[in-house]
Image (tube, rainbow, N blue to C red; front, top):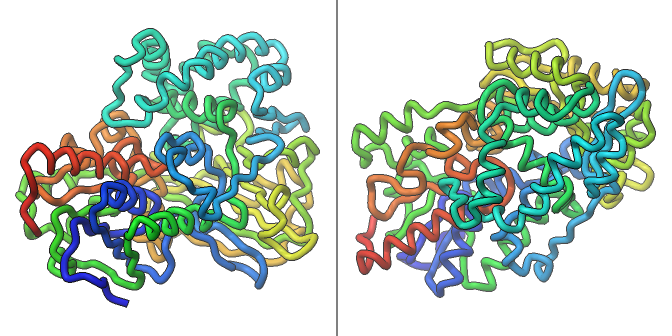
Length: 483
């Protein structure tokens, strides 16, 4: 079905969480907005489908959502009224070790610390002040650029620690291997070598989220997040048109504002002829991060973890010690596929049985590889799971593997398998995709994907902040020219 109008106040290209958030922000002001989605299913990185066997519901990208429940924007939306229900595992995350023990990241700082032996007080001393300060600094941390001046004391403490590498923070605060390994697993979500900035910032923010918000699942699959956003948008009068791939700005209806929930590579294709040379070069020089090889499994029984406490966790970090994880992440940045990759696993059906037939389970995992790699990491990823869950392969009914070079086939934003919208090094974390951030040299054209601050994750903040920028621009000049 084509758009119902000949022109709109705003057109949004892409229906990922950020595109839908931009559309909602505009629609809440009473303006007309249409979202154009290339695929026949909305959601971008928040989609679900039967990838293996009938009745087994898998998430195409993200499953655990710490930043979604931490998002100030999502909290301001009536998403529960539109079918979104969060399910919190008994423990957000676990990190099993070779000796059969495991560090369990509990919602309680104290309970997490109690499992860390000699590092119990060290963990309390690190995390307790940060968790207490989070309500003061969350909007600043999840904005662009990072601005902590509104709460200078709490902000200064966070900023001082965040501007260190994860390796340095772990060495400074922890004495023993278990605590360091747990910290490294959380830091590895940055997709950076652990000796680089700002890997420490990722470890702190995601570590705080374990205790402040948890790492919940959306009941029924991550598609429920996109569906709830879309349902709310429609109550505001917004439209969504699927199966409409935008290859150039000439394809879209005239609009006062255009938002692109795309990465720099697609923006060049869509708007390149209209963009000045310097900005085009900035987009061409934008660096994408490592890719992932992702596997989904349909399982006869749940994963047989050596440590039974791991069954309480929704997500697990597999990689052994800090040193092992750091070695694997450095190998990826050196263009190699590690023999023992850092592996992130989620096991949602232990807490949400609606995703599989009775008594059966689903799980997914990824291992990081160089961008656009054609290497199939299935054996190496499953070896890491077997390392901590002997007999895992005997539980597999079916698997679905997507190598990094093919990730963009179901979501064009996953360039080369990069799930973070671009490398999250210090420069690109703050100035994404360049110093203009959401704005482009075209006065009515904005970029609102995870290639803008605050970066990757399902939180909608990139979309909201891009839309607020556009509304402020419109107000400051009394209207914008149409594309």
